[in-house]
Image (cartoon, rainbow over all chains, first blue to last red; front, side, top):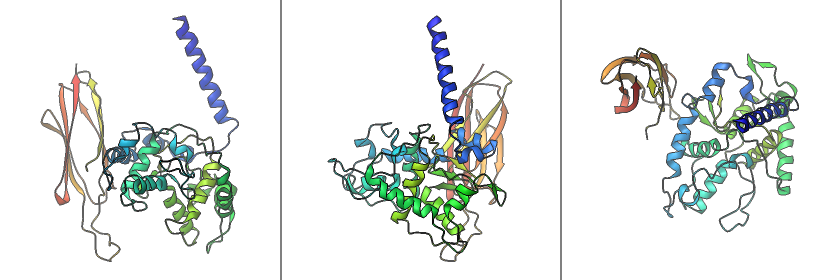
Length: 261
Length: 106
């Protein structure tokens, strides 16, 4: 009985310090905190969050054999082994033999790499439902974990490139990402609170899209919004931006699959 | 591949009002939108949702093209007897999904 009380006491101390560490020192806000209560509840309830439909789909795909190798994801990766993986991407991937493969990729790119190299199947089309569902299934296993970009010095030039794009004015409106999301975050843009652009919930179920979408889709949206030309889906600029944004959101809790208005 | 998320209590007291929530994956294509080729995408919606309690209908809903994709339905029922709650979605292009959840009353 007594040990139980001590454990409870310790647990509450831990919860309190955790809340302080997150709250007081860290002024960054996830888009979640700027949503209305109804949407927050929608995201928190796994039977009301439409993103969970895709997590379910992803779970089914996970054990479905594909490609010339006729292997499923589950044949190599144990259930639940993807915990924490989404917090580390984009990263420079390794192949099955432990050798580095090309430049940095995000989680979607990593899934497609596994698909082509190990399953020997056609890669999923960008933004396709199967790709997003698998990504959602993988990312949902890292829920609540802090975003932890890998301390890989080879990522530095890409991070710098991402930071440069983030601050570069572009498009007919001549705006940079930073104009809205650093300088004017928290203010209103046509009645909507401008978020701080922390990629905490991707892939997100955006009500406006009525579908799941990736961070790339969000970036394309923003680029079109500032009347700039969006990069092609496989452009390295997105990965560079993602590396920078994940670094910017380092330590914030992952919420995938997020719900956003 | 059908995909449904149901949130209903597993147990209830007799006479208790329970909330049943159901979310289903469906595009709810309105039939008014032109596709990339300029032609109208044919309508593809869920037309009807019904819920039964031990085979007796307790809730029915007719859906329209104005309802968003992946419709979420929530309704209430009075728990009277143990058994199964049956949920049934029917719609365009032969769409039919049936799901059941058990509930113990007592």
